[in-house]
Image (cartoon, rainbow over all chains, first blue to last red; front, side, top):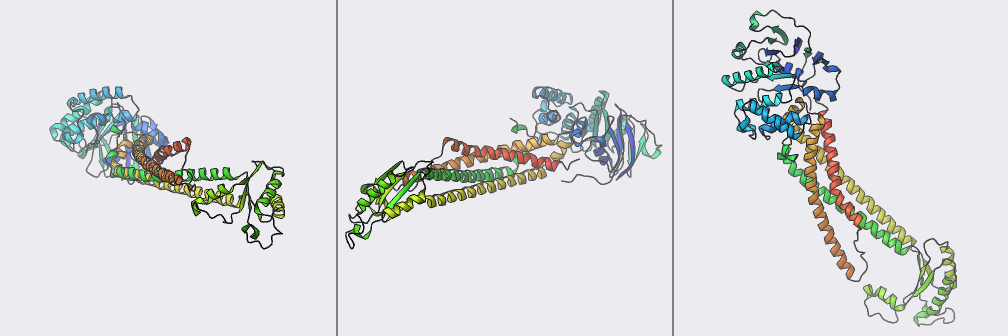
Amino acid sequence: MLSRVNFTLRPGSFHFLTGSSGAGKSSLLRLMYLGLRPSSGTITLFGRDVATLKRAELPALRRQIGVVFQDFRLLDHLSALDNVALPLRMAGAAEAEIREHVVELLDWVGLGEHLDAKPPTLSGGQQQRVAIARSVINRPRLLLADEPTGNVDDTIGMRLLYLFEELNKLGTTVMIATHNEALIGRFPHPRLYLDHGTLTVMPAGMTPSAAPPTPSPALPTSLTASVVGTGWSR
Amino acid sequence: MFRDRLDLPLVEDATGRFMVWIMAVMVYLGIMALAGALVLAGMAERWENGLTGRLTVQISPQPDDLGRGIDTESVAPLVQRTEVALALLRATPGVLRAEAITLAAAHKLLEPWLGSALPDDLPLPALIDVDVGQNTQLEVPALADRLARSVPGARLDNHAAWLDDLRRLARTAQLVALAVVLLVGAAALAAVVFAVRTGLAIHSPVVELLHIMGASDRYVARQFQAHIVGLALRGGAFGLALGLATLALLHRAAGAAGDAATGMLPAMALTPHQWLALGAVPLVAAMLAAVTARWTVLRVLAALP
């Protein structure tokens, strides 16, 4: 499905990932958050070749990657607070510390009043902010978002993107998959354009029609991979 | 406390109610089988203790003893023959004690079957209770031989055949009980595997999400373990209560039968340790369920990247 995909993300960079539906954006993200293994190629995360890691070492690596989904993927039976607390609990943090951090972060994304609200009682924008808070509570080094504005209106979408920029300024490497050209136009970030499984890197402001491929220098998070087939068997 | 914030909404699953019932029934069956085995072992031990080290000499009445004398010269009366046998027994090395059972005592033994108004001319055999202790070097066949030659109608019974039957019965019953416990346990664990796999299938999106977020397999397994242990303990408590109630009922029934002076049913006595063992059945079941749940989750999750 993906082939000849070859790129490197500089630490602290901000990229959009674009391409038509079915171009393989989600598969590429899955490769990056280790939800999928490449059938060939090399994925290097934070300077480590993923293929050389034992399976037991992967959870710790995954915890350094925050993921935001188009459909939020919150746990409906848990409060906003407990949803955001999940990554900390997985990492074995103390309860007192967890509460302090989560309350602070939910306050920061403007949901300080909704700590105990269950996701179904929140609006789409609010749910996505809970999801973003959950993805960054662990201070991830890499934040991946798959169509994060797909289920909210443009005003909310803008606010979410400002949130991602804030996080990026704090040092998190960000990659956002989207096909919302209007939003991309307002933010001066380079984009990775995926077309028929092939990736092109374009500087900020350039659109796919006028796209000279840009070779990127080899830096910590890089991916040279191809994938045939997706999904895990149960 | 942990239950309130299980990441997986397992508490809402229908499999939960089903697991409680399965566990209740399994623990109940396990307790009944175990109690049966323990009671049987106790009975067999008591019978054996009562009978080993004891011999019984039985001297059958001969035609003369019945007062229809045909050949009065040949055989001494039963009372005299009993005295001869007693003397012979008491003179035998290894015999600690030999006592004739009185006619009154013999009548009492027969009372449950024949009633209290026994006719005087009932041809009862004379019985001698012989105590030979535990580690006697006594040669039972030789003694039997001598008795039979010196005392017409005398027969020595060392209860060996009866004891062998008893031991075999007890052993077989215990094996059956063990097989029942094993089968019940296997069925309960199969139910746990089924419930856990169902839970994993129902909640696969959440399981996959947790996996992506960096949850270790053990973290996910702990959630299932906590859930299953909770269900198993609840079911187990129910099964234990039901089991103890049944045992109490049986105990009362056996006690009533024992009071009816038949002496046939020994009391269903269990030692405090044995009661503890029965009480531990739900705990052991919950522990096995936890281990099984963990193993099942880890096996399924191993398929994730």
